[in-house]
Length: 433
Image (tube, rainbow, N blue to C red; front, side):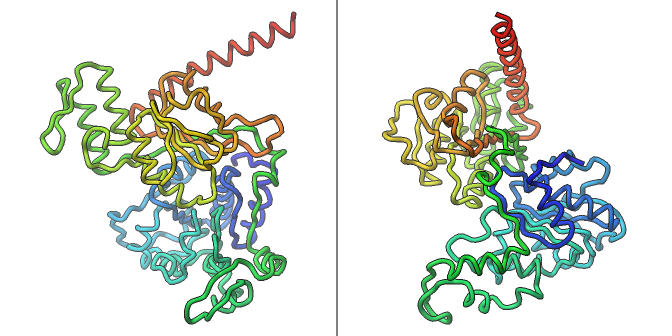
């Protein structure tokens, strides 16, 4: 069993005993808690667990499950998977899939009695009429766990669809729930304007038996000041083919799909091209989408209230992503007046590693990394907290599986280990002086 932090024991215990929505803030370990709970249920029931996640998070979940439960196999299901018959309901194993695949295979998935179903980013089933919501609700399980830090946004009734999945006997009618808890004006069967919750205390009492929700501030004394997450991203389709073509090119140049030539005069140029292909293939003049950028777009969509600083080595990528997200960018040669006014921004590592104070931003994403440990440390320091701050700084490093990203990480790890040793020697010398 992976050691749970003290505050994780409550949702672990409750999710074992009943269907539960874990709505803790990002960074508090909802994934770890749900896997440990599902593993316990799996062993007790001797039945498989179904995990439904966004497509971009499938590799990350697969690695996390493997890390927490090495003894039971994982069966990944994609849209192209041929599911000939229902899964055996009397064996312990994991089935990992995504929303699009559930739409294709739900009929066969519904013929298995699952020990547990985990639905990550569960706000994606808030639309009770959406096909994926209807499909997921037809799949049977002894226990259900929903994960999302944003169960509803403007309309409090958005949480009804999740609650209806968890406790259908208690939450039968959407409109009864809406009328009881939503502050609105106008006609329900026509145009109406939503102003939030009618009575917060009443709303809380109704949903509390089925929801665990803690913010980072709630558990601040139990959290480290900095949480680092290495998130694996799998290159698929055209991006994977492009990366392979560059890596295996016999000559110094590689030929692209359109017949054009990608010039690589030396080994260093080839490494740079591989890094570009791994983060943003459009840097190479292609029309291929990058899996890391797709992940970032989903992250922003799933976490609309998060402050966010995004780093990349590449100027054109920073500008393109900034335009896609509608956020400011800070790259070489540009200026950014009063950066503290922006809750989200993107910057190149070299441009932003010095001179910016972004202590109001709590989440940092590195689309790619520099080889320089100094440049990376300076970039991280842009969001350095004052000593009185309680909310941890979450740093997410996106790493494309089986690419040059792994070499960069290893190189940085070695450099940081040396820095830590030197710092330890200095501390010891000061103590002995």
